[in-house]
Image (cartoon, rainbow, N blue to C red; front, top):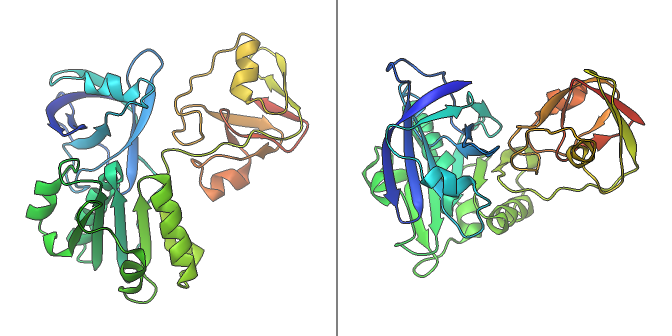
Length: 310
């Protein structure tokens, strides 16, 4: 865990760009494009945000946070932060990394989904790997990072699409790239679904399509099972359509949760016995196969019982 200081704050429309550094000016842990960090915002608010800064910059992390009417407190708390404030921050974790062997990378960012694409474009440009970046926004007035994109060293690789001017045409974008291109998309669920559906229809393989999720539909159906806490032997029944977090809360056990959708990893817990039924978007396939970890907010059990390291 890191304790970082806000050294810059810039508001672009409803998007707040925060820049963090260490108080002593020292280097930060390395990250690769597509990584995110969790911000601990007080009152049990923990929110994941994509790093949008250049991975080559070891002195700063940058995140961009959209303030919306649907915010459940995280964005509001983040927008209240000021230069000089100190914030607890997790080390970077990457579930949306660039494929190092892709002959061409097609980046598509919709709205606030442009944030991981900024880091990807910077990393690809530094590595001199070919790519194109398409940024979609409703209007020019609602778009953030326009000046940065137009002045970037990779500006010639960027195309910007506004819904009220010239909309993105997915077929032409997905067809107008070299063979075996990998496509990366982040933004509204409708955009990500459309990109995936169109790419598959055009012959892209599933492993060529990469998405960054900040909202996911959680399925809680399944047979009831028991969980036991290793620390005190408490055994709790988890009913159908009930999460482990909810069952534990009814038993008086509080678990730190944030997204409640299996995305951020704040409720990650070790499994000592039993087989989890993984329903998250956080763990890698290797971590899921090991059956040693579970996201308590969404995952269930394939076995009748789980022993948790709680």
